[in-house]
Image (cartoon, rainbow, N blue to C red; front, side):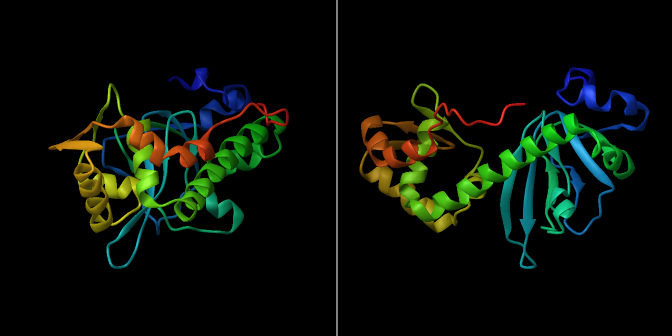
Length: 224
């Protein structure tokens, strides 16, 4: 995606000389948790992940951010530093809006409308995921995740580690749930693939998660 094709272009076109373009390879750190970032990024291409790392080396996935979204130390804007690492999930192209330009853009209602809409929507999505962890059993969430991310009843995954990371669960909990689903013949496991054998059972297990995550057309809605 070109910067000229983004939703923010009309707001920033007078400041194009101040916008820098950065490219990162898969796995490359865009910023570390302790690093100060002078500005915010807008993702033109690729996906980045935001995660926190404990002093014991345990990581917690905070967010997965696609293109056409803002990313950076956005929590700092609210005096709530989360000390998160920002890492390229694949080849990533970012447009950096430096702090001085961002300060000027705060006086632009069109830019602020886009910025607050995009960042607040993501915060609500993250908040909803946290609520779901307390509302539902892990097997309900796992069944829903398999159904939502499978194609032709085939679910492929990178590794057990990546699944644990994405689902914010322990290896023990994930393996116990997988073994349970295999024993009950809901799924069949072949290397890094789950084959859905009893779709109706998974639908039944995850029905309340599906109901909670459905998107309804509301009369009251924030429109850009």
